[in-house]
Length: 207
Image 1 (tube, rainbow, N blue to C red):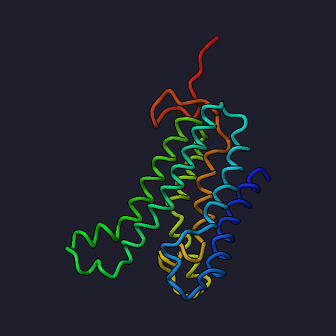
Image 2 (image 1 turned 45 degrees about the horizontal axis):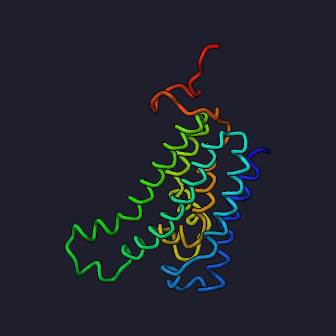
Image 3 (image 1 turned 60 degrees about the vertical axis):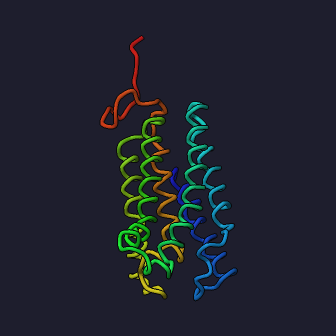
């Protein structure tokens, strides 16, 4: 029951994206790559409201840091993702050297990995989530695109099952949002004094 708000917000992000895509560009168009999507800030705001409510028992410093980090990384993901996707799908890439083509094609995935690593490592150190929730979030984030591709394939979704359609369909966004929220639940709310492999609980001091 406690996961229902997170699940609802996660599903909402995908629904908002899909509704806007159909209303503004239609499914057949590729014009959705590049323009600003209002579904992103609206969905992100809903997620931030959930985050603030979920972290109300955490320290003010940890709560503000996580919220601020989420805003910065979210903006980087949207604008950086839009730019790298335009690069990766540019018809001019074939005119450049091979290394440039490979780099541009890989740039969305590289950005996705970097932003995820920064988020999960920061949350791990600030909030001391339980290992089960932390690794569920990490594995969900890593598997978000494969799961979206599997869903596209299983539903015989129009357009096929590829990375572009995982984004275009909106299927990948609920998985990502759910994965990002998992480490924020069942946590110790104490900064970790040890490294990444330390105890699941924060440092404690004997009275």
